[in-house]
Length: 113
Image (cartoon, rainbow, N blue to C red; front, top):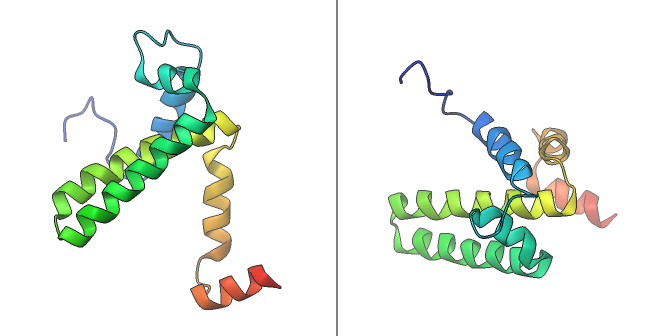
C-alpha cells in the first residue's frame, strides 16, 4: 500500500458516503452521482434493486470476483439512496452494533414482537 492511499477497510464506506454527499449539488452532466440525485428516489431505489440482483446472480454463478464488483456497485448505490433519504451511515452501523452477538432467529422474533 502506498503512503498516499487510505487504508482499505470498512472505513472506505464512510469515505464513499462523504463523496456521495459532496456530489449532491454537482452538475448531473459531469457527475453520475449527481445524475442519480437529479433523477430522484425511485430511480436510485431501482438501481439498488438492479445491483442487488446482479450481486445475487454472481453469487449463484460462483464468480467471487464478479460478485465483489457487483457488491461494490450495490454498496455505492445504497449509499446514494441513504444520502437521498438523509440517512447517515452511523445509524446503520449502530443498528448492526446493536444486533452484534444476537442470533438472527432471535433478532427476527424480537422485531415481530
